[in-house]
Image (tube, rainbow, N blue to C red; front, top):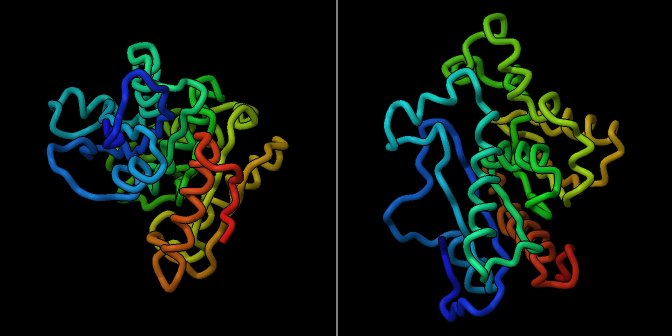
Length: 249
Protein backbone atom coordinates (compact mmCIF):
# COMPACT_ATOMS: atom_id res chain seq x y z
CA UNK A 1 0.00 0.00 0.00
CA UNK A 2 1.43 3.37 -1.08
CA UNK A 3 0.09 6.39 0.82
CA UNK A 4 0.33 10.14 0.08
CA UNK A 5 3.09 11.93 2.02
CA UNK A 6 0.54 13.93 4.02
CA UNK A 7 -1.77 10.96 4.55
CA UNK A 8 -4.51 11.60 7.12
CA UNK A 9 -6.49 8.56 8.24
CA UNK A 10 -9.43 10.82 9.09
CA UNK A 11 -9.87 11.68 5.39
CA UNK A 12 -11.34 9.59 2.57
CA UNK A 13 -9.03 8.56 -0.25
CA UNK A 14 -9.71 7.04 -3.67
CA UNK A 15 -7.92 3.73 -4.24
CA UNK A 16 -6.15 2.49 -7.36
CA UNK A 17 -5.28 -1.19 -7.62
CA UNK A 18 -2.28 -1.76 -9.86
CA UNK A 19 -2.31 -5.38 -10.97
CA UNK A 20 -0.20 -7.85 -12.93
CA UNK A 21 -1.00 -11.26 -11.38
CA UNK A 22 0.82 -13.38 -13.93
CA UNK A 23 1.71 -16.96 -12.95
CA UNK A 24 4.95 -17.34 -10.97
CA UNK A 25 5.22 -13.54 -10.66
CA UNK A 26 5.71 -11.53 -7.48
CA UNK A 27 4.34 -7.99 -7.48
CA UNK A 28 4.90 -7.05 -3.83
CA UNK A 29 8.60 -6.78 -2.95
CA UNK A 30 10.50 -5.09 -0.12
CA UNK A 31 12.19 -2.67 -2.50
CA UNK A 32 11.45 0.97 -3.21
CA UNK A 33 11.26 1.95 -6.84
CA UNK A 34 9.63 4.79 -8.68
CA UNK A 35 6.80 4.11 -11.07
CA UNK A 36 3.72 5.60 -12.67
CA UNK A 37 1.25 4.36 -10.06
CA UNK A 38 3.33 4.09 -6.88
CA UNK A 39 4.94 7.52 -7.16
CA UNK A 40 3.19 9.75 -9.71
CA UNK A 41 -0.42 8.80 -8.99
CA UNK A 42 0.10 8.78 -5.22
CA UNK A 43 1.86 12.14 -5.03
CA UNK A 44 0.22 14.06 -7.89
CA UNK A 45 -3.33 12.77 -7.51
CA UNK A 46 -3.40 12.30 -3.73
CA UNK A 47 -4.69 8.74 -3.87
CA UNK A 48 -3.82 5.39 -2.32
CA UNK A 49 -2.27 2.80 -4.63
CA UNK A 50 -2.35 -0.88 -3.67
CA UNK A 51 -1.18 -4.22 -5.04
CA UNK A 52 -1.52 -7.80 -3.87
CA UNK A 53 -0.12 -11.20 -4.85
CA UNK A 54 -3.00 -13.64 -5.22
CA UNK A 55 -3.05 -17.34 -5.95
CA UNK A 56 -0.51 -18.33 -8.58
CA UNK A 57 2.11 -15.86 -7.38
CA UNK A 58 5.68 -16.92 -6.71
CA UNK A 59 7.53 -17.19 -3.38
CA UNK A 60 4.47 -18.10 -1.33
CA UNK A 61 5.03 -21.83 -1.59
CA UNK A 62 4.50 -24.42 -4.31
CA UNK A 63 0.91 -25.24 -3.32
CA UNK A 64 -0.13 -21.57 -3.49
CA UNK A 65 1.51 -21.11 -6.89
CA UNK A 66 0.19 -24.39 -8.31
CA UNK A 67 -3.49 -23.61 -7.71
CA UNK A 68 -3.84 -21.82 -11.05
CA UNK A 69 -2.49 -24.71 -13.13
CA UNK A 70 -4.92 -25.26 -16.04
CA UNK A 71 -7.08 -22.50 -14.51
CA UNK A 72 -5.61 -19.18 -15.66
CA UNK A 73 -8.05 -16.31 -15.28
CA UNK A 74 -10.27 -18.09 -12.76
CA UNK A 75 -8.73 -17.04 -9.44
CA UNK A 76 -7.05 -13.75 -10.35
CA UNK A 77 -10.27 -11.65 -10.47
CA UNK A 78 -11.60 -13.34 -7.33
CA UNK A 79 -8.46 -12.64 -5.31
CA UNK A 80 -7.97 -9.08 -6.52
CA UNK A 81 -11.60 -8.22 -5.79
CA UNK A 82 -11.52 -9.92 -2.37
CA UNK A 83 -8.42 -7.91 -1.47
CA UNK A 84 -10.09 -4.60 -2.29
CA UNK A 85 -13.28 -5.64 -0.49
CA UNK A 86 -11.09 -6.32 2.56
CA UNK A 87 -9.63 -2.81 2.33
CA UNK A 88 -13.09 -1.26 2.07
CA UNK A 89 -14.39 -3.23 5.05
CA UNK A 90 -11.29 -2.64 7.20
CA UNK A 91 -10.13 0.94 6.67
CA UNK A 92 -12.43 3.93 7.11
CA UNK A 93 -10.16 6.10 4.98
CA UNK A 94 -10.91 4.06 1.84
CA UNK A 95 -13.49 5.81 -0.37
CA UNK A 96 -15.57 2.87 -1.62
CA UNK A 97 -17.22 5.06 -4.27
CA UNK A 98 -13.91 5.77 -6.00
CA UNK A 99 -12.10 2.48 -6.68
CA UNK A 100 -10.22 1.76 -9.91
CA UNK A 101 -7.78 -0.80 -11.28
CA UNK A 102 -5.37 -0.93 -14.17
CA UNK A 103 -2.73 -3.17 -15.66
CA UNK A 104 -0.60 -3.88 -18.74
CA UNK A 105 -0.21 -7.20 -20.57
CA UNK A 106 -1.17 -9.92 -18.04
CA UNK A 107 -2.22 -7.00 -15.84
CA UNK A 108 -4.55 -5.85 -18.61
CA UNK A 109 -5.88 -9.39 -18.86
CA UNK A 110 -6.52 -9.49 -15.10
CA UNK A 111 -8.07 -6.00 -15.17
CA UNK A 112 -10.49 -7.05 -17.90
CA UNK A 113 -11.35 -10.32 -16.19
CA UNK A 114 -11.99 -8.46 -12.93
CA UNK A 115 -14.35 -5.96 -14.55
CA UNK A 116 -16.23 -8.87 -16.15
CA UNK A 117 -16.32 -10.76 -12.86
CA UNK A 118 -17.12 -7.86 -10.52
CA UNK A 119 -19.62 -6.07 -12.74
CA UNK A 120 -19.21 -2.67 -11.08
CA UNK A 121 -19.94 -3.82 -7.52
CA UNK A 122 -16.44 -2.95 -6.26
CA UNK A 123 -14.60 -1.20 -9.09
CA UNK A 124 -16.04 1.83 -10.83
CA UNK A 125 -13.54 1.64 -13.69
CA UNK A 126 -10.63 -0.22 -15.22
CA UNK A 127 -7.92 0.58 -17.77
CA UNK A 128 -6.48 -2.42 -19.62
CA UNK A 129 -3.39 -2.06 -21.81
CA UNK A 130 -2.53 -4.85 -24.26
CA UNK A 131 -4.75 -7.49 -22.61
CA UNK A 132 -4.90 -11.05 -23.84
CA UNK A 133 -8.50 -11.97 -24.63
CA UNK A 134 -8.28 -15.74 -25.14
CA UNK A 135 -5.42 -18.22 -24.65
CA UNK A 136 -6.24 -20.06 -27.88
CA UNK A 137 -4.69 -17.07 -29.72
CA UNK A 138 -1.50 -16.87 -27.66
CA UNK A 139 1.96 -18.39 -27.99
CA UNK A 140 1.43 -22.14 -27.52
CA UNK A 141 4.73 -22.65 -25.70
CA UNK A 142 3.64 -20.25 -22.94
CA UNK A 143 -0.07 -21.05 -22.92
CA UNK A 144 0.31 -24.83 -22.77
CA UNK A 145 2.91 -24.55 -19.98
CA UNK A 146 0.10 -23.44 -17.69
CA UNK A 147 -3.07 -24.56 -19.49
CA UNK A 148 -2.10 -27.84 -21.19
CA UNK A 149 -3.54 -28.33 -24.68
CA UNK A 150 -6.94 -27.10 -25.80
CA UNK A 151 -7.97 -30.71 -26.45
CA UNK A 152 -7.18 -31.72 -22.88
CA UNK A 153 -8.52 -28.61 -21.16
CA UNK A 154 -11.37 -27.15 -23.23
CA UNK A 155 -13.33 -25.98 -20.16
CA UNK A 156 -10.22 -24.34 -18.70
CA UNK A 157 -9.66 -22.38 -21.90
CA UNK A 158 -13.28 -21.26 -21.90
CA UNK A 159 -13.09 -19.98 -18.32
CA UNK A 160 -9.74 -18.32 -19.05
CA UNK A 161 -11.24 -16.30 -21.88
CA UNK A 162 -12.39 -12.77 -21.06
CA UNK A 163 -14.96 -13.01 -23.84
CA UNK A 164 -16.36 -16.44 -23.00
CA UNK A 165 -16.04 -16.62 -19.20
CA UNK A 166 -18.30 -13.72 -18.21
CA UNK A 167 -21.57 -12.09 -19.08
CA UNK A 168 -20.17 -9.14 -21.05
CA UNK A 169 -23.15 -7.07 -19.97
CA UNK A 170 -21.24 -6.73 -16.69
CA UNK A 171 -18.96 -4.28 -18.49
CA UNK A 172 -21.91 -1.87 -18.70
CA UNK A 173 -21.69 -1.33 -14.94
CA UNK A 174 -18.15 0.12 -14.94
CA UNK A 175 -16.11 2.46 -17.08
CA UNK A 176 -13.70 0.39 -19.18
CA UNK A 177 -10.82 1.53 -21.40
CA UNK A 178 -9.14 -0.88 -23.84
CA UNK A 179 -5.72 0.23 -25.17
CA UNK A 180 -3.55 -1.76 -27.61
CA UNK A 181 -0.77 -1.31 -30.15
CA UNK A 182 -1.61 -2.53 -33.65
CA UNK A 183 1.87 -4.06 -34.10
CA UNK A 184 1.97 -5.82 -30.73
CA UNK A 185 4.56 -8.58 -31.01
CA UNK A 186 3.53 -10.33 -27.79
CA UNK A 187 -0.23 -10.11 -27.30
CA UNK A 188 -1.26 -9.79 -30.91
CA UNK A 189 -3.77 -7.14 -31.92
CA UNK A 190 -6.31 -9.88 -32.61
CA UNK A 191 -7.08 -9.93 -28.87
CA UNK A 192 -8.12 -6.27 -28.87
CA UNK A 193 -10.10 -6.68 -32.09
CA UNK A 194 -12.00 -9.68 -30.72
CA UNK A 195 -12.63 -7.85 -27.44
CA UNK A 196 -13.94 -4.82 -29.29
CA UNK A 197 -16.18 -6.97 -31.47
CA UNK A 198 -17.64 -8.85 -28.49
CA UNK A 199 -18.26 -5.71 -26.41
CA UNK A 200 -19.91 -3.94 -29.34
CA UNK A 201 -22.12 -6.99 -29.91
CA UNK A 202 -23.30 -6.62 -26.29
CA UNK A 203 -23.86 -2.88 -26.79
CA UNK A 204 -21.24 -1.94 -24.17
CA UNK A 205 -20.12 1.69 -24.09
CA UNK A 206 -16.34 1.72 -23.59
CA UNK A 207 -13.13 3.53 -24.56
CA UNK A 208 -11.28 1.93 -27.46
CA UNK A 209 -7.76 3.34 -27.95
CA UNK A 210 -5.31 1.87 -30.48
CA UNK A 211 -1.71 2.93 -31.18
CA UNK A 212 -0.74 2.47 -34.82
CA UNK A 213 2.47 0.54 -35.49
CA UNK A 214 3.33 0.24 -31.79
CA UNK A 215 4.54 -3.03 -30.29
CA UNK A 216 3.76 -4.42 -26.84
CA UNK A 217 5.63 -1.71 -24.93
CA UNK A 218 4.04 1.22 -26.85
CA UNK A 219 7.20 3.29 -26.47
CA UNK A 220 8.31 4.50 -29.92
CA UNK A 221 8.38 8.24 -30.52
CA UNK A 222 5.85 10.18 -28.45
CA UNK A 223 3.64 7.14 -27.84
CA UNK A 224 4.85 6.35 -24.32
CA UNK A 225 4.28 9.90 -23.10
CA UNK A 226 0.93 9.96 -24.86
CA UNK A 227 -0.37 6.68 -23.46
CA UNK A 228 0.47 7.51 -19.85
CA UNK A 229 -1.32 10.83 -20.24
CA UNK A 230 -4.43 8.90 -21.36
CA UNK A 231 -4.15 6.38 -18.53
CA UNK A 232 -3.64 9.09 -15.93
CA UNK A 233 -6.56 11.18 -17.13
CA UNK A 234 -9.05 8.32 -17.30
CA UNK A 235 -8.11 6.91 -13.91
CA UNK A 236 -7.99 10.34 -12.28
CA UNK A 237 -11.43 11.18 -13.66
CA UNK A 238 -12.85 7.92 -12.35
CA UNK A 239 -11.26 8.56 -8.96
CA UNK A 240 -12.72 12.07 -8.74
CA UNK A 241 -9.46 13.98 -9.11
CA UNK A 242 -10.07 15.72 -12.47
CA UNK A 243 -13.20 16.96 -14.22
CA UNK A 244 -12.77 15.26 -17.58
CA UNK A 245 -11.54 11.88 -18.75
CA UNK A 246 -9.86 13.52 -21.75
CA UNK A 247 -6.54 15.40 -21.44
CA UNK A 248 -6.78 19.13 -22.11
CA UNK A 249 -3.32 19.52 -23.60
